[in-house]
Length: 452
Image 1 (cartoon, rainbow, N blue to C red):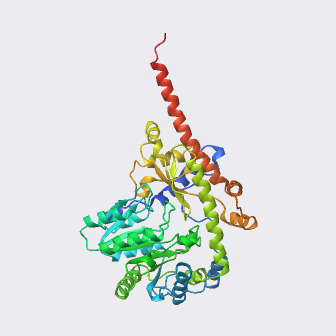
Image 2: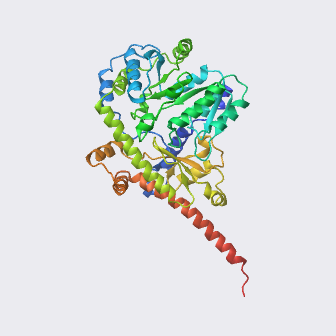
Image 3: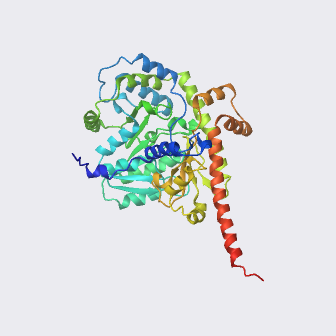
């Protein structure tokens, strides 16, 4: 029997990170070179390498017997804990009734896009998960390319909004940002908010990386600036290294009781509720404690050390630019100064650049520009600097916290050898590329010189 798949599903591609993971597993098994048994240098996957905090693990074990369905918006204990957590860390005074729990922020963003009418404004470069959801839902959307600073320009946002016919618009704001690692400060958020109020733009503020902000005092939630028009999504996956728990939450804007009842119908129809044991375990993660505070401080400090090393190594390549991250475990590297060299080597798209880097001898995985909603010919790439044993590195950091630049450099070299070796491979790739093209040019010039 032949099964016919709906056309809109046929039109959706597998997310690039999962597609790349499948490719790498197959490539690793096929590589004939014995020295490459380490696999590859992994700069492609955005997953925190640290262990899930012990108190969450213990709470999950303790609540493994919870087999009953939970309430659709989430168990009361969890919504209360999230309310207090947001008050403590982000200064948001949010009643538990304005908080709904879902199976990860990805699903909750999808649910919001399902129910909200209006054209979506997607700033680029962007996390690779937003656009497939927008397309799957057949939403009208417009890209908003960011400028050299890789942040939204309020003037550009206003100009785009004025061209859109829908009475209501939806801006996806990812702060801190994946793939750049950059943070919007309070003034920048206020300028964006002025445009949103003027042009009737709602904001889905994806703040999943909030607690990875290196100088946490600088993080400001969009909900503090634009409380009447901002949906905040956050969860366990990045700050608590618990992506596999699949638990996120959304904070609704003020005065949205009717909207919440409509949203509840969507959740009940699609997945009933988040796993009950996971919800009980999450309560421990969202409770305020010295242990969880130490965990946040240590993990963000390690991310910053790895990020600074990665930034300095990449920008040591002549012509390469990169965003200097304020948060997350990513930066955006710009290799476009090598465009002519890449084209001469028949590498004409960012996808081909990714493929050229993964083959022998480089074995280096990146996420290329076209996966980040950039032009296919944009040779930018997201670099995730998390290819190390998080549990061991966490313990080493506690025993001897590096303070000076030289101590931090030595810390990376000792504790993240694959990050170091992978960055060396990236350096070698681009230096060899330029060297090969220079050699070819010299050979051509030599052949054109007539013998005397």
